[in-house]
Image 1: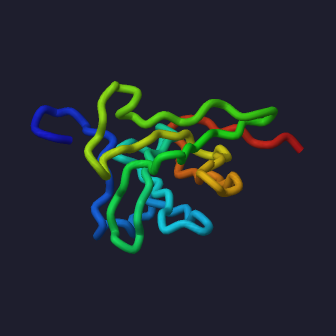
Image 2 (image 1 turned 30 degrees about the vertical axis):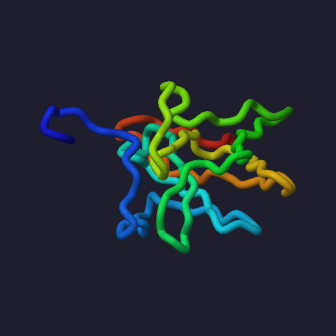
Length: 139
């Protein structure tokens, strides 16, 4: 929480804090980049992650390279590509500041030039809310 009492969201992790339990890395085959998933100030109950493209060798975030697109794979077909937060707001981010949002526990497809689509799963960091009953499987 900042001085105004607002909770900022979308904050990227510092390189030194990459080992936080809620920050995940998705390696991209045959690529120098990876996809970095992070909470960005959201609580686990929100059921979402922010993500960006990350150059692990240089330890810097980069904007999505031209031709790269991440799409959620829903049962029965693909949805449209996930648009960056900045593109949704109509702004052009400075290099390394672009970020995207995705819900937990979905399968995604990364497409990029001259490569086969790469499927990967978004993990879950959800925890049950206090005082809320949980469904159980009927035996």
